[in-house]
Image (cartoon, rainbow, N blue to C red; front, top):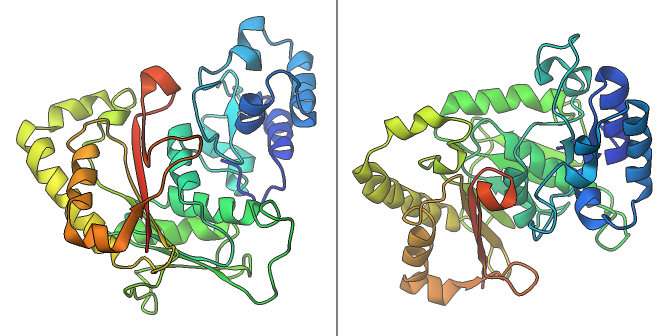
Length: 328
């Protein structure tokens, strides 16, 4: 995902990846939305592809089965066309663009979780199970990227956007703090954002404080087995049938307290495709008396339900589940 605070456009990122490392890429949103009439961004990238004499089976029109299958294409994401780095680089983490904070690496399905929050500049957002901070950085980039897209207006002066990253593993929060400076979000970075972790003494969470709360809950990771196949041997039936859904529901209910009344948003997500962890948790959450008094379902665009499941076999992404609500 392009970091909008460091890199102004998808085209700029694609061109730098090619000029620095001969890595061919194309904006994912452009690929999905402008298939019939390539945009200026596509045309620029096509020129780079033609210069490199890419084989026909590596052209953008055949590079991803995501076409026509993702309902809400993630903003600011680029997709590698062949995925091969030159011999000058050992890994994607050694690329200068990454070192300069121009992009973060996440699966396309994971990016959709960030999009599902609808987070905007000037809001208070809690990334409740922040892990290593990939979605914290994605939220900041999306909010900054959308600042002039929604209605064309500038943010009023001195209006700050707040993101608070929380995780029960303190070492993960320290890792997030180390990533903020590279991404342009540290103390010397962008002044439109105040980003803290609950590792900070002054970053207390309080009831009803947040416009958006994202709960990327701990799960069985059954949706990412193609990346971590050994994970299947670490799971037991009782663990994924009983322990995890109980923990996930507990976390979801606890996080829901922090959502503002009158329109605050709550997003629940897992990287699992197992119904006990997904629809099962949603049904339990919605069956409580508190839900009917305080919450309403927040449907996805296009007449779709308020929850979606992404499958590797259908969406060419890892497996994810996303559900969302608004507080009355």
